[in-house]
Amino acid sequence: MSLLLTRISFYLSLAGMVFAGFLVLRLSAQDPVPPPPHSPPSNPFVSSVAAAGIVEAQGENIALGVPVAGLITAVPVKVWDKVEPGQPLLHIDDRELKATLLGQRARVRVAEATEARLRGMLSRLEQVTDRRAIPREELEMRRSDVQVAEAELAAARAAVEQTETLLARLTVCAPRAATVLQVNTRPGEYVTPGASRAPLVLGDLTYFQIRADVDEQVAPRVRPNMKAVGYLKGDTQKPLPLEFVRIDPFIIPKTSLTGSSIERVDTRVLQVIYRCPASTDATLYVGQQLDLYLEE
Image (cartoon, helix red, strand yellow):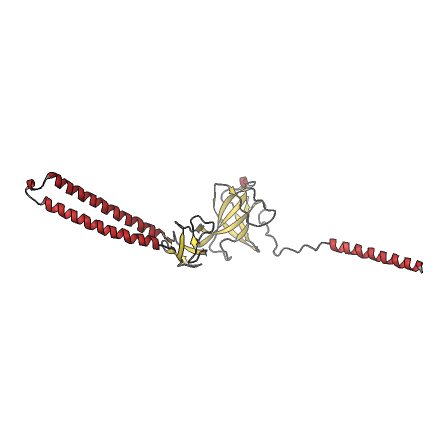
């Protein structure tokens, strides 16, 4: 009986060891790496410089600013609206300045009446033919009073013009013809100058330009008029022909574009600007990323 129990215990232990080994192998096995959703772009050149690019509007995007902090009262435009130079885009609360302007205009009318009264008195005194009837000092004092009144009137009018200029600044207008790309503010929100997020972003969509970032390690290999081909993220089978525009002569710190964990962000980049011809059939949007190859 004891021999039978010993054998059963042995076989149970053996089975437990086999099961434990199988479980360890199963847990340590790695799932196969799935293939990428899109095949990487192929380099069409024998020798080239690789770069990461981003789509911009013609002449770069315009991050609209505000001259003063204030409450937004109206945003008369929306995304995709085409605007002309001088067209109102934002209205900032102007009630305080309008109240100030009422008092200043009233002071202008008072100054005008005072100046007219003193000038009339001086005119009547100057029409007296007998100079002995009016002391010379009195006549000079009247003339001085008129000059003071003229100066006060000019100061009052200047204050009105200043306030009107400040009022005009509270209506932010389009600096040039463009398309509204983003509206980041709404009526009732408070805006401040220099905010990290612009209230509105404008851009001329007549054609698109591509800003390519070339790492400074390979920047010496970049030359003007280098032929380039770009591939949109997720569409690696349709190369975009690009036209050289310029090289920005200022190397700047790199901004992470791809989001990859191996992307170096502690380096600097040379920016090369290309233009995408208007005849291209690709659908482009401002802010899209591209992979570029510049032929050496």
